[in-house]
Image 1 (cartoon, rainbow, N blue to C red):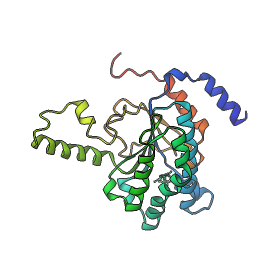
Image 2 (tube, protein in one colour):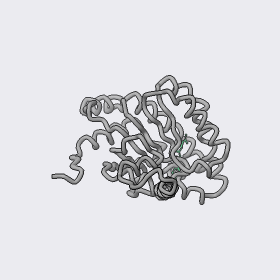
Image 3 (cartoon, helix red, strand yellow):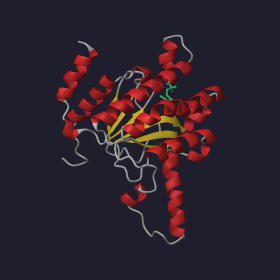
Length: 246
Ligand code: FPP
C-alpha cells in the first residue's frame, strides 16, 4: 500500500477527540542512520532537522497541544567538540527557514533546558523565536536543549529553597513543584516516543512522565515519518490508561 493510503487508513482509525495533548519525543538514531549509509554523523543530524520540520508541521496541523523534542541532553556536552558545535548550529538552520511558517501556523516556541550552558548565539536564536511566537495560541513547541531531567528537578529544588528562605512559600505539593519546572503551565506529556530501538528514558522529563504512555519504534529519527507518528498516536489510543485505578 502507498504511504499516503496507509496514512489515510490510520487517520480513519484515530479518534480526533482523543489525541494526546502533549507528545514528547526522544529523537534517537541520527548517527546510526548516517553510519548505515556510509555518511558522516553530521548528515544524520542534518536529516534529523528535516524530520523535525515535517513532524512539527504535521503535529500542529493535527491539533496536538504541545510537542517537546529532546534535541540535546546535558550528557551530550561530552561528545567530541566538532559534533557539539555542529549540533549547536542546528537551531539557527531550523529557525532561519521555519520561523515565518511557525508564526503563520500559530505555534509557540519555547526553550526547555539549562539556557546558561548554551552558546550566546543559540540562546539568542531561540529567544528570538520565542519572542516572535509569544502571542501565538496554537501548539507549544518545546526544544529541549542542554536538558536533563535531574538537572531540572535540582534547579527546581534550589529555587524552592530560595523562595522558602524569602518567605514566599511554606510547603510544596505536586502542583507547586510543577511550577518550578521548565514545563510550568503545560500539561504533562501523555505520549512519549523514542526512536531507534532503544528502550530507555535517558533522563528526559523524569517528573512529567509519571503517567505517560511510552511508545518505542525501531525507526531511526531521520527516517521517522508522519506515518510513524500516526502509528504512535494510534497505539496510544489503544492503551487503557488507568492512572493507578482499576
Ligand atoms: C541522537 O542521535 C540525536 C541527537 C543527540 C541530536 C538530535 C537533534 C536533532 C534531531 C536535530 C534537532 C533540531 C533542531 C532544530 C534543534 P545520536 O546522534 O545519538 O544517534 P546514534 O545513537 O545513532 O549515534
